[in-house]
Image (cartoon, rainbow, N blue to C red; front, side, top):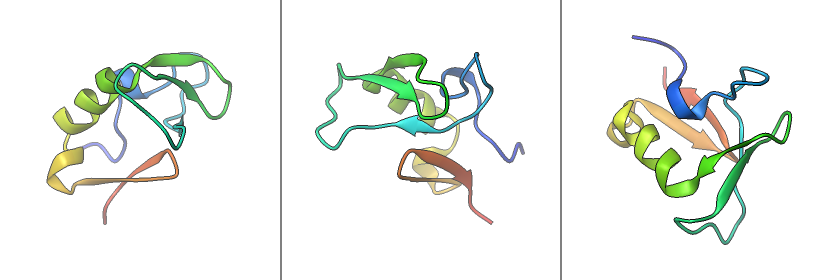
Length: 71
């Protein structure tokens, strides 16, 4: 299994998976890469992608927008 998530969550500009998620995030909120500020998509789309890659099963964790694989 990959140690990092990819697909919509990986920034196509800088290659990081580090999301800027506002405190009042809603389904339609645009989410940016924390490293280069590129818009990655709407929160709902990214959340679905996160869960489809194991985020919902406890394989990955998200802390302050950074997604890491649990050891």
